[in-house]
Image 1 (cartoon, rainbow, N blue to C red):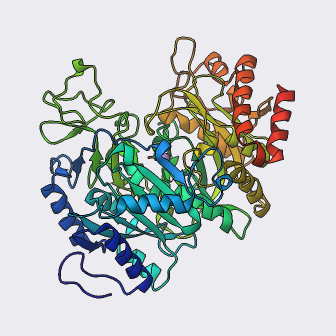
Image 2 (image 1 turned 90 degrees about the vertical axis):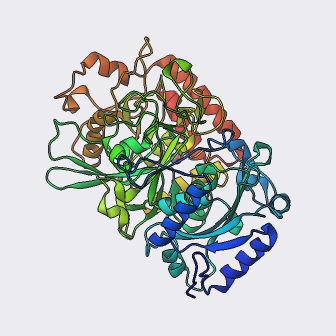
Image 3 (image 1 turned 135 degrees about the vertical axis):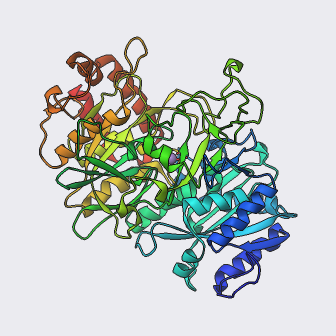
Length: 591
Ligand code: OXD
Ligand code: MN
């Protein structure tokens, strides 16, 4: 590596990388090209620049050391699924659940938009790793971006800089990512994936999920495509470790749709009645999993940070998240208090007078508006997490004993049940439904099918994706057991039937006891279900009647559920594995 005299001038010797960077710089014509090395000195330099440009605001150093505040363009606050494309030569490869465009047309259109698009700006070259250095699952990416905010977020969310260039050496196997905010015009916003070329181009947005290209774009959309071809899985799952008082460790992966509590579940603190039990976090959003030589499924978290939803996070709902975001965190679209602190709906204390909302307007509770955007976020390094599992930093990955699927469902879905077997479990994941949240632009609270919580993130035909899930079983002699949970069922008065948060530990305990052959269950039409007696209810007033209500299988609700599931199956009909059609028929006959 050359040694530069000024920040950003030191480029590596990799010829392929250099040529590609030169080509994109010739197209986008930035004023300068800045090569990121990921060092602490560089971080300080970039933060200083971001504050000087007004992109970031330094928060109160005493209350929030090393923390910064960012307001996005109000037209750019969430993922935009309608602008997200999978560009494969044949439409069928992307499948009916993705927006599709032919690669040649899309490259032409995007290069047209990018031509001269970085004039007057700096183009940052951001080399990064998704995954711990040295893991066989880890992937290298390079993102070229004209957003200093993106660079500073990528440094938290991935292993960024020299470490990635070292792993790349003089190789050419890296994901090519190009990002430009352009004029942040929703009409000129495109998030495009070219899985066959291991390439991503994102224009017209500055919002995390659209522009931190290592996350949803590489780790899920392109990752799922690579995983299918290379025999591994890229999933929208948290990974946690449950450690018993005797030191037994059980690893669990769970897929819930965006803004349905993955971060809370991954950092859960067991209730006081369970002394000696501990939950540690491996990841809160994405799991890359591959069958190991011992026939178990091994998972890594490809990310290095948390890009979490702020509203609702407090010392009661998630104390570990609150501690994680107390330093070295970037806050986006939350409210700003007069003393340089941050605030959001559901934070522990009320907002002090003089608080500015996420758009910078003076806010009061009487305004009827939200102070923080419902999809406002924190970006925090995972090493801040007081319950980070040491395994999160290791290359080997962890063997998964249980996979949990779950959605946000006011009706129909019981608190917890277990699938009869792997194929039935794949069916449970494939037919998952959830009410829509603020994480994506669009209407809120409507049940939509979100198979494996991957509907917005699967980089190829969903029917082939189900087949890949079924096929992975062949390489597993000891597959994870598969479960379904629903923390969000409501009663007739619209009240939640289950307290959730830390109490979810009780459910988790039944799950891991099932994996270890220690807990009983009864066979029902939809799967194996626990008896009330299976749980230790000390410390919580949770009567049997409420439990029964929360576990109820309602014939009419299930009839509607089956009709709604059928719609997805019809959409996918030509690539839908027949195993799933059989599972549906079996369910119908059992019901
Ligand atoms: C996320 C999402 O940001 O799923 O993780 O939208
Ligand atoms: Mn997510």
